[in-house]
Length: 158
Image (cartoon, rainbow, N blue to C red; front, side, top):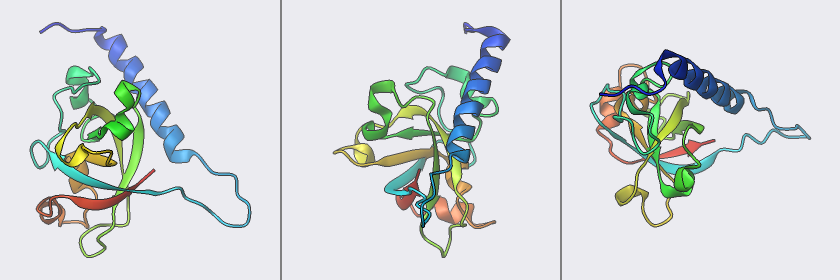
């Protein structure tokens, strides 16, 4: 297996991803008289092992970096609507599920590392295919296995 970029490349990529994700997390809209949080509807599924990091690198070419923090357990594939022919690589999204009976109120932050063509991701749908670990993080404490058993979920994202 050939390594690209070495340790310096990993550090640079991780710093860029953290910076980009922090911009998503801390961006504050200009407030007028009401707060608009800009959440949009989508759907989500999961892939890989239930507690796994998900992808083995994906279409974005991150390779084994998806197993290294800060990417670890925070990766996901997105439908072509969000992947945008590769322009979506490295984008960060907050995703939260809507079923209050099993989902916590917190959102999980994911980093796009792959595209999910076909199936749930086809026909212009906005869809997230999250790693098992990222998907499970949306659950109420102790309910992550039950959440994963639900299959496709309605979610909100930003």
